[in-house]
Length: 67
Image (tube, rainbow, N blue to C red; front, side):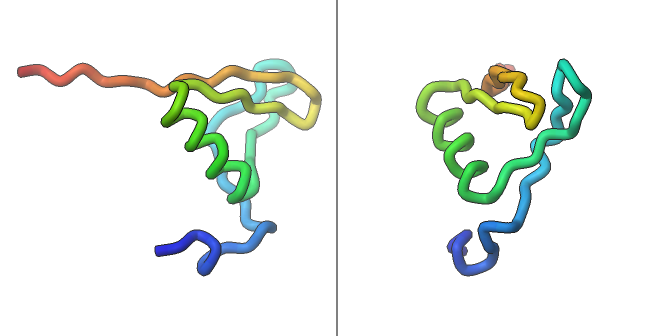
């Protein structure tokens, strides 16, 4: 399934996070969300910026498997 076929630039992705400064819920457009996912996959981290200007570093959570 191609994201471009089923979404528009106006579609938003709920990041399920709140800004630590103003408490606003963080949403991204689909192209921005794809860039955040790519950054998380490549580097393990990404930066989200709230409408109030606060930058937040998010990191990929790794789970250890029990053998």
